[in-house]
Length: 326
Image (tube, one colour):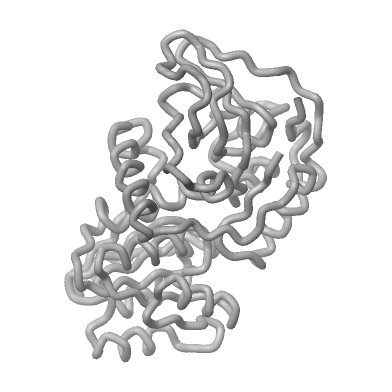
């Protein structure tokens, strides 16, 4: 079978090689999934460069999200074969391969009727957005949510989930195309941060009150701006640092304005409280069936184009998720 493999660290085009790999065999409690679609993530680029927090030994295959069909099941896996699933293959044998062995606990049923590309694009982004909005920020119906980087994978999920919860959504994005994407996703107000003063615009849109919940996967200057337009008793959810700079949160400012800064490390829930992501998956599947969410796929590319697609993802010229099909 074919698999992408990092033999030496570097940018994806230099680091990744398409190789003939051994067929995976399911161990006890594992299943082998025939990969129909594999989602690409920014951390795949960091893995190739050796800049991610997890540093697997060389050689390794990246890829954390796949959708496909169970073709072989190990003893104690509770699968028999033929089930359509979403899976998170563990490193060093990730999902950028035609087939992959995955532990039972990292496999979930694919929502009924969901195409493979959307199923592969759903898991990490929608789980992250759901945990951020509901478990961390305790979002309530009627509140105003400000979503930064609203056209991105996790931002687009946050817009849809906030709408599904009955919230009012303000979103930021860079450029006319991405601002239009935010509106299409359901943002009542969409702001081009390159052209507009986001703080003033948010205050104007909320009658001077500010946003009750701010969903921030960017950090840096964006976090600094968020502190200036968060509402009394508002909540800023720190999701990531795509902007590159880790901002500081002055506690005196949080005290004066009575707001909270909440961290979200979604991956940790899988280790500490693994039952919660499975429960949230059930809720997300119900929301998809009800037409409340629909994963935004920017492009589905042939398997051979994975390095080029990762380069495009790294340039920030895309929106939603990029997906590869073996």
